Length: 209
Image 1 (tube, one colour):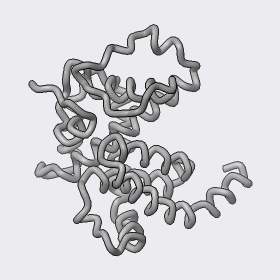
Image 2 (cartoon, helix red, strand yellow; image 1 turned 60 degrees about the horizontal axis):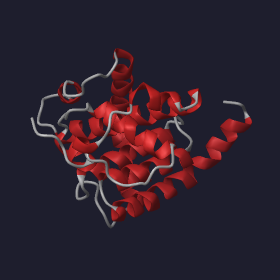
Image 3 (cartoon, one colour; image 1 turned 45 degrees about the vertical axis):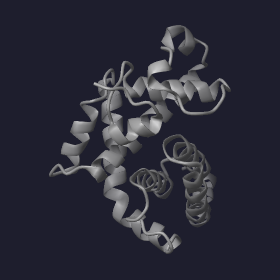
């Protein structure tokens, strides 16, 4: 089986290479956390991070690396569900996850929870995103961009992730999986969502929720 040559091709094709996609995504997180040069990783040229690289991270950084990797897999899963011709979302998700090697049972359950949660939230999310970007229909935009917006909206509107964190991750995902132009568009749309949800976020924080 051929190896995707860029992260975007990994998303579009959902094909595993010598390193499974979860490891590739996790390594990308390691590069970001350790301040390495930004840019696409080539799957066939990416070294195995190994235990030594993981040991250089603090427990908090390691948890963050895992969390971001799981969220990025969830965005890929959301894209796969949207693009699939299979009869149900779960069938599409099963097909996508069957191509990811080395994912733990707990990790798979987390990806399922995130991806299916975002998929079920899409009707509410799409309605707001359509109001906020009337000049650019969700159905006209690239599937990767649509998946990124839907997932970020799900995280922000359901109070799973702080809006600023969700936006920063969505921008990075757009740059990594799509284009710089897409990153700017994603930022502009999600900033409008943040303005709506931030008051409730602040109220919840004041109440310790």
